[in-house]
Image 1 (cartoon, one colour):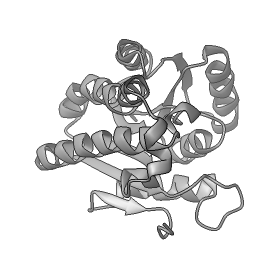
Image 2 (cartoon, rainbow, N blue to C red):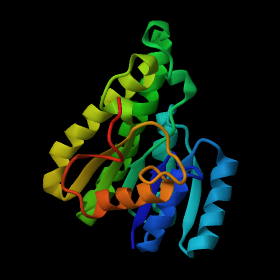
Image 3 (spheres, rainbow, N blue to C red):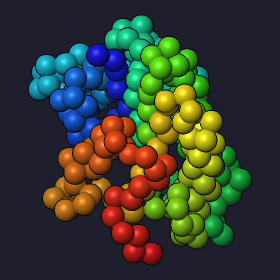
Image 4 (cartoon, rainbow, N blue to C red):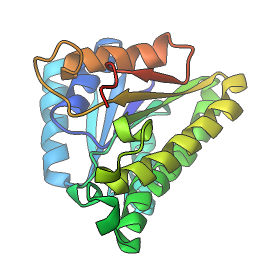
Length: 222
């Protein structure tokens, strides 16, 4: 079996998705900014699932670290068949538009666009070797509807969405799926639609079954 890599792995959605893909036979590569935490999470998930799970430190605002971590994951575990890009945006990106500076936007674009480009570019050749693959983008509601209260994510996610849509159009004929799920608001344990395990099932279905570029975790309420 090949590898499922999560850029932006944490103990809520990331862990739930890792469990779901591990249950389907994938080995797991977890990328996160905090090396100690991601190593501990990998150890816990490996013990729980019985799969090979490795953690790698990578900062999506330093895009070279993303490419380097995915390269190490490929060397350690094998070719990456499924890439999930789901880092949690910084609170600094959630400022009102009239208070958001050039530097704020630059950071948001590094986070949402440059990191995504680095990740997708790094795994693409391996997917072409396999003859299949999925690139899964996990975004908040501002990726679909701009919100002046959250200017950084609105602009950053817009760029990320445009990039993902272009990949979708170019790679679909090569049997490489590019999909996006919009999760309005926050992830909520126990919520009927936004519980981590429920979302993980939807993300698995994006890889295994979906035919549309975009899906929604729940109805947009704004």
